[in-house]
Length: 256
Picture (cartoon, rainbow, N blue to C red):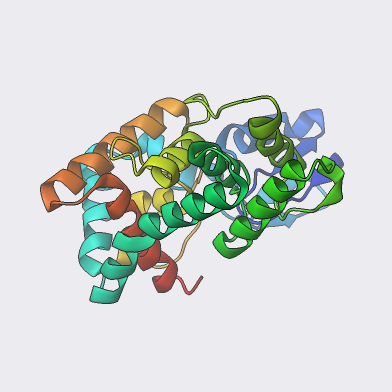
């Protein structure tokens, strides 16, 4: 009935290679980049989704007003501890990059680039361990195979090239570029828009937990970044502080 079924970790892209009779459904699935939160009912006669992709909320069909209202609701829903932790998150992250840069005599922004390159689908505490392991291996002239990281192999190689070849993370990779700028330089002009920020854009605190399309195009990324920066300015915050406060708040609300 289908040629292959690739199941990746939660939040990753899911692709189904179906027979020609299911080509229309294949295009819908591939076009929306559905996450593993979407569950499908398999039938002998064909494949029928329980929740079709066009019903999922996504940034492209959500107005600026709705995104702004949802993000503002999450900010208003933050308690004092959320606000405190959010405001200091990037400062502490920058402190880590400064410490590692001094320890290994590596430019601080390069350290931030390594941290950022290793960040996708990686918990923060593990992210820091992986970054230091990579930098330590490079400084000690060990091979890239001498250590393991808890992210994708391509990201490991990308992080390694930052040290070995002088590669930099460019704006063509908006999320990791923004994260490097936030962690390395506390840039007020960049916002790290991850899946949690997208969820907060599309769902208010009262909506509960439901699946949304968590990927955005570079154009939509800039749009969400501009909306986030606008709210931050109105609230007297740095854009990265607002993002971090919302990140802490929604993860707590979702018990993640």
